[in-house]
Image 1 (cartoon, rainbow, N blue to C red):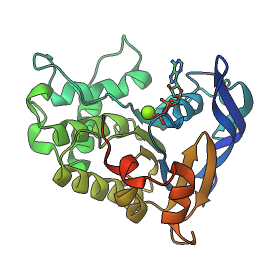
Image 2: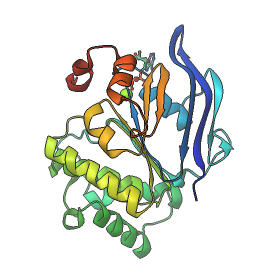
Image 3: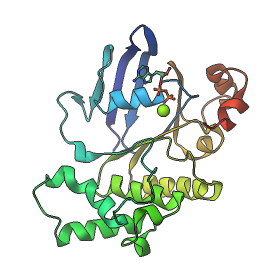
Image 4: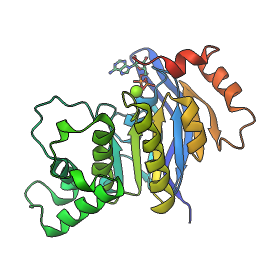
Amino acid sequence: MSYPIIEVNNVSFKYGDQVVLENIQLEINKGDFLGLVGPNGSGKSTLLKIILGLIQPTSGEVRMFGKPISKFNQWSKVGYVSQKANSFNRGFPASVEEIVETGLYGELGIFKRVGQKEKERVKMALEQVGLSDLGSRNIAKLSGGQQQRAFIARAIVSNPEIIILDEPTVGVDTESVKQFYQLMGQLNEKLGLTIVLVSHDIGTITEKVTKLACLNKKLFCHGSPKEMEDPQKTFEKTFGEDINMVTHHHH
Ligand SMILES: Nc1ncnc2c1ncn2[C@@H]1O[C@H](COP(=O)(O)OP(=O)(O)O)[C@@H](O)[C@H]1O
Ligand SMILES: [Mg+2]
């Protein structure tokens, strides 16, 4: 059965005088695989921060599992992979397992120790992302694509209903990007995990997601990519004419 997990009602946001988001109306339902696309500076990360309750909208409201975000407290139901999750310096002294374990701290509290049950859950999460053999490896010694998988394992170890990922494929090689989308599709279909994926990589994402939202300060389209008359046209309207700049210009 599908029900709303996130409801964004008429949300606007300003940094000082600068309008960053204008009247955003968005619903994310159980089982959705939503791609949120838009060029650099279009407000994607800001919208995520509002959804996660990290910043307050200037007007409008967000509900999470039916509750106003300020009253919501079941954060173990929500996994989050931030934009800079996989940028490590070489000396970072933690194993892959230890990184994934930190995904359980919200549930455990800081004083409770990680026991056998938790170790099992970490193992399962690593299995789900295909990293079973690398649990004891130092995280900094993994490739970019493998580090990314470790962070997905960390986000799903608490058995959340929804995971939210901010530009997870930036700086990851083409082969790993392919595997990443495959993994996301599997988690969505097999586990029924609801996924919100932020990207400016328009080409690939359109083929994989079940819903698409195009953001550029305002929400320009929102729906199934298959039902959209001409996604390319919509993108041009959202992003301006020079789509190549948007799709291929990485900072
Ligand atoms: N902390 C901040 N203070 C002031 N302006 C900000 C801040 N963070 C982001 N912005 C501005 O808000 C706009 C949207 O940024 P952001 O949400 O990060 O876009 P995106 O994630 O789509 O690239 C940009 O113009 C950016 O410069
Ligand atoms: Mg961003």
